[in-house]
Amino acid sequence: MPKQTLWTFHAHKSVLVCCSGHFRELLSEKSKSGTTGPWEDEKYDMTVRSFDGFQAIMRFVYTADERQLFKTVDANVDLTCREKVATLIEIMMQAHELGMGGVQRLCAKRFCTSVTLLSEDTILKIFEASVQCEEDTLGMYCFSWALENWMPLVRGWSSEVSEKNTSILVGLVRGFVVSEIVPPVSQ
Figure 1 (tube, rainbow, N blue to C red):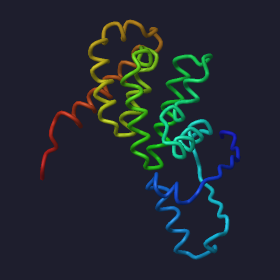
Figure 2: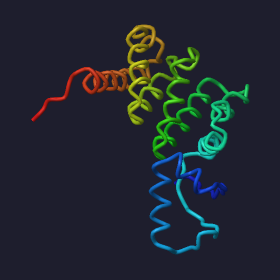
Figure 3: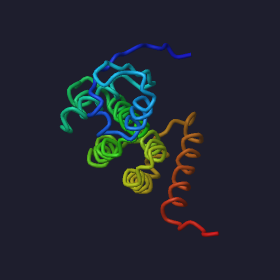
Figure 4: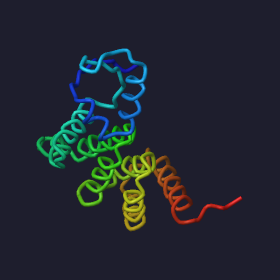
């Protein structure tokens, strides 16, 4: 079991309601129950994917500044490419879970415009995240990158992971092609 940690974030209800369908639903349910007065502090327990990802989203929600969203990634020059990708994926996945499509699209755009983030080491994680978050633009970018770099990509993997990674990549490509290119069959 992963270690559970309690973090506290202070936020205004009106800001949260404006930025996320998840918070809109959560807060409207709580207000309908009438358990607290209009000016009382309310506490909500929720599970977040990561402290850094949620903190980045909260900074962005209050500033609407894209630099604040990616501050953790940009400010730490010691992060490896894999760590930057993992942090961006955490932010994108957290935004997806919270119904924050704008934040999700900003993360997808960041992947698509940063040529250093896609590599043999990161393509599978980014492609999987694009599928899970239903980020079609990022999915198309990963799909194109994988096709253009197929042979160097497959050759770059060690023999221990090559078969597994190739199988995962083929599955992602197949799923993407079927969902994006082939029109659904009407019944």
